[in-house]
Structures are given as C-alpha cells and as structure tokens.
Image (tube, rainbow, N blue to C red):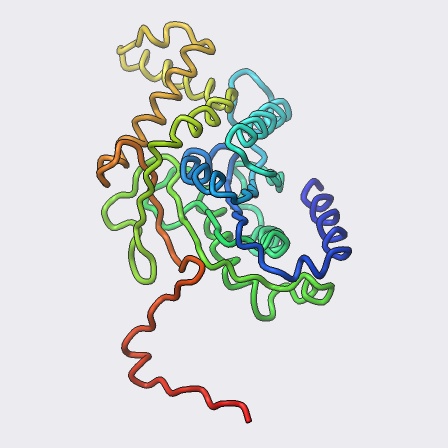
Length: 309
C-alpha cells in the first residue's frame, strides 16, 4: 500500500511537470538497497563524495526491515528500523528514501517482474545519471534479499526502454537509460573471480576523506547494530571466548563494535588498492562526455550511416 500511494503521488506530480520530467537529470543518483543500511555499508563513502560534488541521492529500499531486532515484534521492529534508516540517510546527506515496504526475508515470494517494475517506475521519474545496486553476482551471500533486489534492479537497465511499461510512456513517463551502474557488495570485499569481467571493470574508490561521515551515518542504525552486538556476544560465549568489551551491551559498546566493523571493512578494501579506507564496485558504463570504444569485430564491418538528403 505504501508503494502504491508513493507511486500515485509521484505519477500525479509528473503529469503536472512533463516538460521538466522529459529532461535527463545528470546530477542525480539512485541507490537501491534491500534494507535501510545496506547501501550505507557498501557505498556510503562514495555517495558522500558525489553528494559533496552536488549530486542528489535518492534511495529505493525494497524491504521493510521487520525481522532484525532484539526484544521487539515485527511491527515494532519495522517502525524502529525505518526510523533509524531515515536518520542515517539524513546524516549521510540523502535527499529522500522511498520504501517499497515489501516483507524483508520474503522477497523470493514476490514476483520479480513486480519488484523490477516498481523500481523502473521510480528510475523513470528520477532519471539518474548513476545507479547503485547490490551485486547479485557475488558468491555465497547468505542474505538472499540482496540477490533478489540486485537481480531486479539490474533488469531495469533494459526494461526502461522499448516496449516495457508502455502504460507509463502513454501518460508521458518515458523510459530512461542510466549511463553508469555501480554494483556493490554489502558486507565484505570482492573476492577473486567476482567483478571486473565482460563489459564491466572493478573500480576502487578512496573514501579516506569521507569514511567518518559514512561511519556516523551507519551508527544511526541503532536497532540493527544492537541486534548484531547481542548476536556477537552470544556467539562468543558459546565458544567460551567472552569479550570484556561486550560484557554489557549498551550504546557505547554497540557503537564501538559497529564502528570497528566498518573500519576493518574499509581498511581491508583500501589495502587492496593502496589507500587507507576504500570501497569497491563492479562498474559498468561511461561518465558524461565519454564513450566506450567499439570492439574491433564490430568496427571491421561497420559502415557510415547514409546522410539525410
């Protein structure tokens, strides 16, 4: 219901602003995320860099985050995590989060076409220059919502052209091809054999200057961070390796654990690429003003287009 209301509102707005809607928005980014914190962990530092350059960032969140907390029911968990996500997005500098409110952990039960079309509609509206999405091709990711979200998001690159969603084109919301796509891994660095193949390349970004702002945003995810800290404490106890740092799970210990996790992730990626803190992406596309060279097997048979008389 939340998505339908949001979509109706955006569609009505579009109908009253068709001349503006028809123009591409080169300083706009759409980041797609299964949960409220996934894009922050995988791409937060890079997004801050673009925000500082004047980009507006819009986040499309596919799941409602109702399943990750300690001591709360599903409805309370959803509200708490969504409030945390809004605070985190504001801390990072995100312009708006659009939450599709699908049930977290159950995206496999949702029609992939429906999920794809939900995202396609919003991408047509925002008309971004860059698209960030969870990489559905990384190996052995235990979080399946990342896969279903990433796969549907990737398909928007071809469903926003041609004959898809003809009903939107009929009311003036025409297709939009995103020039640049950044695939991100949420919880770990890329491994050998992941990323940088075919038309894509593995691209590292130095976030040494923006890491602190990324960390401050991620620390706003208090409900999920607390659940993570409690799970770590319990696992250490089961292994007979209790930590004095988690003897008491409170705001200070939760922030310390979450902050250290973020630092280790950024430092591990950075060490691969010669910087102190880094993020990495499977990148596909061309920046404004640049074109990908045509492969030689195409050029050898290419002929110039006939000039119009």
